[in-house]
Length: 246
Image 1 (cartoon, rainbow, N blue to C red):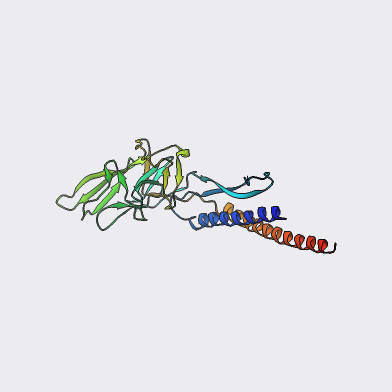
Image 2: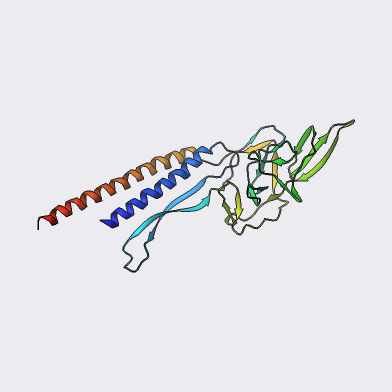
């Protein structure tokens, strides 16, 4: 009976973990540039001194769905969408370089160009800073950031170029802070072929219908696993009653 209980118990646990991934996808269905998390089950034999007669269930997360989302025009000067493959390089909360597709950029009170989460946007020579008092900040298709200073006439100068990269898909993995990073943690070289769509944002690639179907399916799987645990308990009680008669 312990084999049945063990498989059902680990199956129920990993089903809950997958429900968390689905819930996170649904919560970010409207987040710009979000990439849906992928997850799947696999059976793993229990390794020990005895024969491998027991297995447990674990979740296998192959990564994220990196298919592009729909680009929507916003008309906002600091909104940019990556066209095709490519990423925007930022300085993550841990101080290390990370990559995002969320092009909803801001200029903070210190003049730093950041993402909406406050991560500094990196240029070819480090974080990009806009002169304080600039009246207009624009981004071109190649990532060049220009700022207009008041005066007669107003002067527009380039203050930096956003670092755009295009690493191999298999080299990237999602970190806990939501940014993507390379497996070895090393920065990726900029790629001049990556282009931006100014005045636009890329939507999330989460398929709401698919995620809702997954959530219902996982709920049924969890219910099946809990019923298996209950059945194993009933069978154990029945076996104990039969043995007590002898």
